[in-house]
Length: 389
Image (cartoon, rainbow, N blue to C red; front, side, top):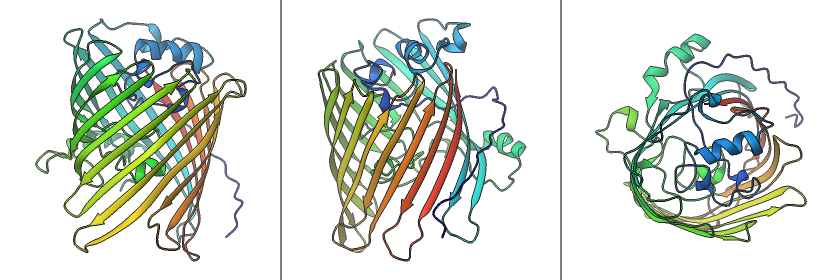
C-alpha cells in the first residue's frame, strides 16, 4: 500500500439556521490566560455552553477579531437566560486498504442548541437538544441528510445544577458525562473511545465537587439511560453503572497535575480504571503540552476472563499566529498488556484556524497502525467547518 497519499478537501456548504455543539478545547486552558475550564463554560468541569467570559475570549484572544456575543452581539438575552447554537459540517477521506478504499464522505457532523435557565442565583436548568451526525445514510443526497434531522433528534445533556458562585461547591443531577480525562472535542481519540466516553454515550449522573482557582474536585455516580426511555434519550456504547473521581491541582497559572479513577459495572463486563494527566504551558515558545495515561482492568463475566489495558495520549500544541493552533500528538491503546500484537498507535496532525469570532476551520490528518503484522494501517483525513452563535 502506498503510504504517501495526496488529497484535497473541498467543502462548499451554506450554514443553515440550525444549532450545533459548542464543546471544550482543553488547549485553551493556560494558553489563553484562563486558569480553569469553568471560566469559559457554565459546566463546572468545562465543555458545553460558554459564559460571557468565554464569549469575550473568543473575540479578543482566540480568534482574529469580531464580537463573540450571542448573535454576534446583535441581541443579548436577559440575565436569567443563556443561549447557544453550533453547526459542524465535515468531509472525510478514509483509506484502510479495504475493497471500497479510499472512501470520501460529506455530512452534517452535529447540530445542537443550548439553553440555560437560571431560576435563582444558585439554581439553573441546562438543556442540549439537537441531532445525531450520520456519515452514510441510506439516501446519500445532501437534501436527505438535512431533512432527516428530525428523525435523529437527541438530547445529550439536560441537568439541574446548584452552584452559588463561580468558585466553591456545586452539585448537579441529570444527563451528562461524569468528569474524567482530558475533555477533547474529537471523539475518535483513544482516551475518549476506550475509557467510557464514546460519542453519544452520556449517562444519567449525580455529581458534586468544589472548584477554586488553584484546584478542583469532582465526584460522580452514573448509570445508563433506562431501556424504556425513547431513542432521543438513549446512549450508544458500553452500558455501565458506576462512579468516577477527578482531582486537578494547578501550579503558578501555567501547569496542572490531575489524578482520576472510574469504576464501570455492566451486564457483560466490569471495568476498573485509573490514571493521571499533566498540562504545561511554555509561554516563551507558545506551546501547551498535554498528556494522559490510564490503566484499565477489564473483566468479562461470561468467560471469567480479565485483561489489563493501557490507553495513553501525549501531544504538543503550538500557537504560531493569532487565531491559529497546530497540534502534533501520539496515541496508544494496548488491548492486553500480556499479549503480543494487541496494540494500536495513532499519529496525528491537527490544525485549527479561527478567522473571526464564531467561525472555525479545522483539519485532522491521522495515521493509525494496528498490532498484527497483517492488519492494514489506516489513513484518515478530516476537514470541518464550524460555526456557533
